[in-house]
Image (cartoon, rainbow, N blue to C red):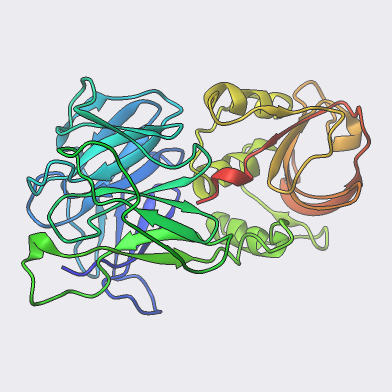
Length: 362
């Protein structure tokens, strides 16, 4: 059939059955808010359903969406482990049997498995650079999913499936803008071809609601989305908003869980940045304290300058950088829980840890 879009909020997936603007046709709930959601036809019935990746563990469901209904998916496939916790997940029909299975990407190499079980890779493919975004699709309609890469607004696609050595570029082209996120799907059904031999093409998502060409994030858009998630309202503190939350870690946990593909590391406010690095060791590292942070960084500190007022420290999100001035979003604990945006001056050597997570935005 025709592929359509869905969006994920926490453990909720909002599905639209047509590629048009409008409200969702159905809602599926599965896994935890901090899980990475994946999609595939796990049992070969022609329907894509949900799965989640949690560390190195996979949980797959064959529960189908039901139009106009809210459905909680159930786990149908035995839980299995594959790859390392920091790997990037790939999904595709690598052997052309009509069933999607998982793979993982580590650096510039994809490790592909032909069954959704624990074990070693059935095939490996190397393509592009470790900094490229790796894509999967059936580019030539032969029934096999193969690799592609996105580098800025340049796309390179290979038609060499696992039975053919190498992964050279067969097609390359420019499309969209350099900060777009590439999407893959069969957007228009070709009725002249069998359903199993449809051709996938590229689309892009332009994250204008989150980021801008300057590299800064859209503070107001993030704040509005956070408010929508938590059902917050204007408070007596003017531009601050009341939040029913568990303290200063709320915003950081929400942003990592819903806006990035990273694993949230937990910890008190002052430890969140370090715990993020520990939970994503192959992807993240702390910014040296002598180097200016980037927009899209999580900060953790025990310094009062950065909002800490006790033994637990404080954490927030850097949404914009202008010279040494940082715009941050933060939630606060206590009797007056609220979220706010404010500007602070960063100085080299400040007692604060920054970790840049903007390279892993959804």
